[in-house]
Image 1: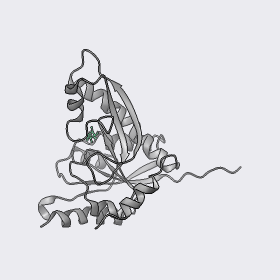
Image 2: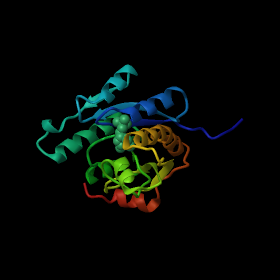
Image 3: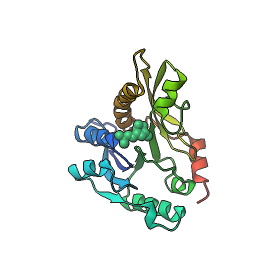
Image 4: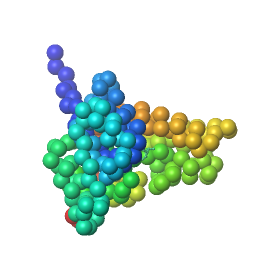
Length: 212
Ligand code: GRF
């Protein structure tokens, strides 16, 4: 019998905080729901709870702190070097609190993805759930997208809509959005592994052309 062989993707996850999306990716991998495996956690925060999650699942992790580097550029290069050394297929941002530089992106064109708690392009940036709540939208949600040099911009892979309920608070709404993030992030990885989500040619050309 012949069939398409799907190669599970190896992921580097970049996280700065609690790491619930890291956990969702680990869980989906371990239960066979995702065509991918978390091969490395990279963090800029030695106190990130994400580190505890990695330890618990025997996932290698590295802490790279800004204070140990003279320049932003040297710090970025250290992250990119760590990703390159690990030989991963995809870099998944999961609550990574730093802007990804063009020089980092140019080393992994079309291979960096992010999860964001709004229906992009609405409400990019920090506190997206609060921004949506305060604007008064009736539907918000979350997005997984390929990362470009902007803030929460780049080609969209998958989205999930979450209604804003009359009795909602920012906290309740955020919790329901987070549940959806945990569903769509592993799905996005599987879509990429299966060739169902490809970075557009024009986008790739642009990422390849970023000056390092
Ligand atoms: C998530 O809401 C994600 O969309 C945003 O940062 C948050 C990270 O949460 N980019 P966690 O660290 O994965 O729990």
